[in-house]
Image (tube, rainbow, N blue to C red):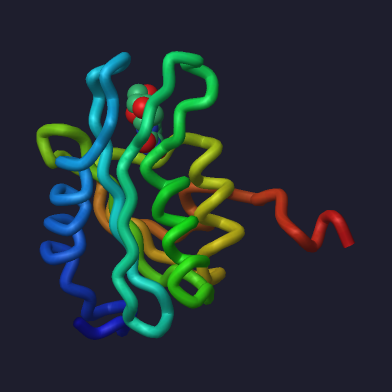
Length: 133
Ligand code: THU
């Protein structure tokens, strides 16, 4: 799979997100989520949501994905998609847009229900590491 911004196999990435969703642990909300992304070097990373009886400490699918990014060599994400239990494309929640912003390239592309959008479009004026400098 190429990582060129205009020539990514979104169907393949979406399928990987759907397959990750099948591994979700969501007995409380029953809302399963899978996420898949490409790292700059072409590596595929995935994640699924993992809930907990202490509802507030639920791990979104993006948390696992970002953990896998770091575990497998780090770098930044270039392309991202997440899906629900019907394999429909959904938007990442607000907290996870922040995660994606910090772990993604500045031009990170997301497949959304309204088409491909940049991270700047889905998280305008993001707070980031530079604000802490
Ligand atoms: N969820 C995610 O995994 N990612 C998101 O971006 C949206 C929400 C999960 C968290 C929870 O397990 C379930 O979806 C319902 O909110």
